[in-house]
Length: 150
Image (tube, rainbow, N blue to C red; front, top):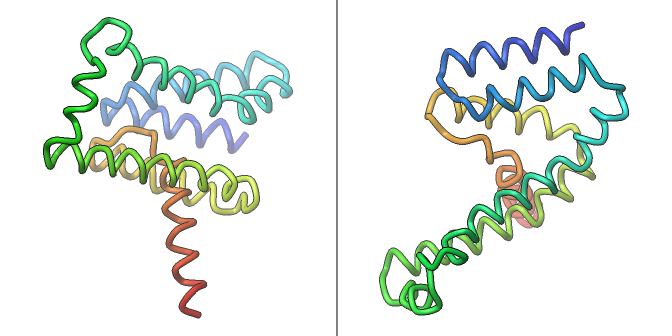
């Protein structure tokens, strides 16, 4: 029962904070939990991240498909400071996500903290809830640095 209350709290805070992405996500999870067998919720939990990444990647590729982004514009991205910073940020984000998934799988007790941090970023700083994966990667990097200096 407490999981319903927690999800409802997230839903209400998302509505108050006008964050429709989290509203939709909370509604989906509540609907799956309430109306479908537990196996479906577990399936969403174990495969949803992959589906989300596929959809996100497809959306990012649309400008290439419709001709807005071309090989020429991609090459030109290396010719400006903001372009180089963006390429570097993309590289670092991909690396962080790459180590974030294994961290969450091997150390599940980090997940609640990632959820709280992401929700705080969404509610208080108008962020977007793509944070847990990247935050897990940053957590991995910070923990690796701490371990190195021990």
